[in-house]
Amino acid sequence: MKPLRLKADLVSAKAQAAGDVTMHDIAVRIGVRESTVSRLLSGRTTPTLPTLARIALAYGTTLDDLVDGMAAPSVAVPAQRGAAA
Image (tube, rainbow, N blue to C red; front, side, top):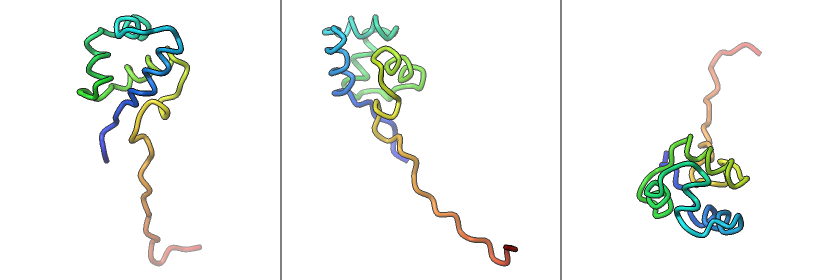
């Protein structure tokens, strides 16, 4: 399974739409350090679930929309032999 990756372009667009033009503005709105915002938007760090939840709440979006890699893998379950119907 590939690691989650924040859709930085979406976060930036949502931030600008909300009037947050600097990393400081974004950090204040979501309640994290400015350095965390910088690392997240540059792709240098993987977002934690609490941070993703803060971003989603702050900018009115969903966790699914914020990250690549959220889709559950398709897993085939083999049928059991001799199973009663």
